Length: 240
Image (cartoon, rainbow, N blue to C red; front, side, top):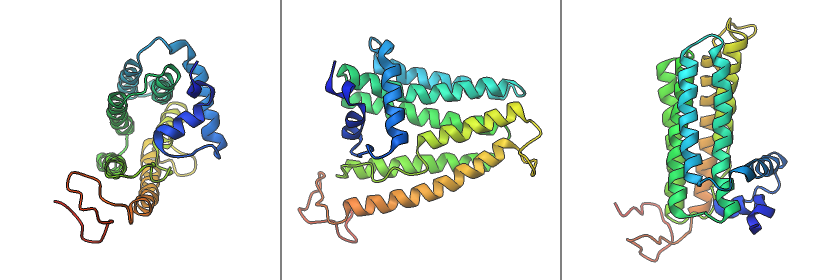
């Protein structure tokens, strides 16, 4: 038994550079996922990451069948979220955390994000809305990854636009489509369209908070990349 198995919150916080111990929701989720991960300790974390992508693709296929199949898509979307937590939990529990695994996990996450957008598309969301929210995810995650690559030690900020929010929004769209195909109450709008709109709002708010966090973390930090000058970050500095 590793120390991170006993304290999954500390392990997650160490890996992501963000202390989440004050959030009861996050703490509860991490403890649940680590408990759920016990039977999977013998499975390689990369296989769990790949399984999440396959399940997400299955959600797109199920949603495309329409009607009550949207409820199967709902279950698969939720399962995708579970797999997203399992790979990291197993890696922490079994001491198999490694840089390559983090890359595999990140690629799998982006593929499942694309699948989530496609679920909304096949459920009826406008193509241009889906393109917009898909690009927002890539911009959100790229900005964070780039900031971490140049020295940001934390996640910058945990925002309203993180993966759990995306999964919840798409899950609601699937549930609504399957149980109330006539549309949302009062307005009668399609569940996928409303969900895409909510996602877009979260994306705007989340990126604003992330940008502020990145600026706070990197302002005044010395450049440590291959073009290091030894000076602190200043306006106009860009080695390219």
